Length: 346
Image (cartoon, rainbow, N blue to C red; front, top):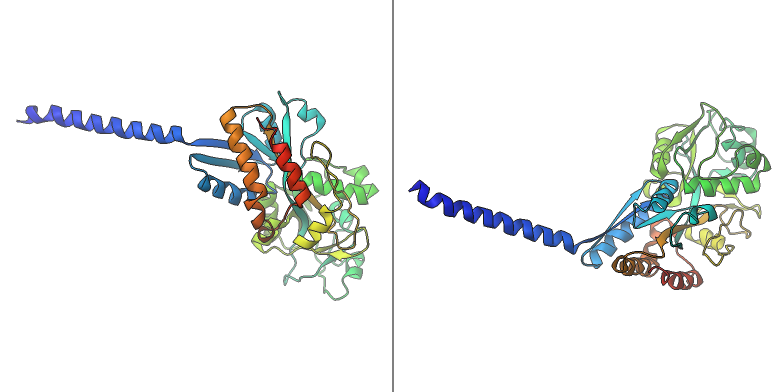
């Protein structure tokens, strides 16, 4: 009896397994997976956008890794991704390495803040524009330094060493931050300069950490620490940030309003690249930037169509959550230019 029923049973199991495998293959084929990598600056809002876009677009999954702007650009040049992201856009030399050309889309914008960790978590710290570059040069080394104290008569500043936390990876956040410091401090420009990676002064009180979340965690875990991070990370993790003195002499805190005042001073070129190194305006926050998505001009037609949909989603529905997540909603004229540029993704 065993021999009589074993063969049909085996056949049925094999048939069932084949059906399951076939169904799984069909499901996998139905999914279009878009792979992206790059900047960690916009990672919180990208995560929200890409998750919701995937949910609203049947058969599409967007997979993004926050590896840093430099790594994203390299992946883009090497064509190991479908798109990339960078806070530093791309240089002419980098663009020349992309076969067929690239489309740069300034998809969102944000502020770079100076986060700090002091005993008792005092708020309202003010940093003059001739002081915070010197902190990152390692020239102002203690929290009760007379130059900091003079700007903060109402704060009791501790006699505590300052630990500077900077990015250890190739970073668009570093590019924007050092570009600003170089614009307002000739000494910083000469000694450190600007770039996605720079030679920071040698000191055991200047330490590195990877990505925005790494710098945020290190600042929060180190009494006396100070570091530069994206405002969205500070907002998400409730990290205390300083008010910075702008070009008009006003101390301004990061916000959607002060960020929008900064973007008003921006001029984007025909390729939609542009930076605001030291904005004019009494209400402008000193350090803000666009951050770019990078697309190939020529690729698979089906992927190109989905990528154009992704851009449209990001500048329409996606902008609605920008303020709540610590980013700056894009001005309507910029959105119009983005929609026109997205047509070049083919």
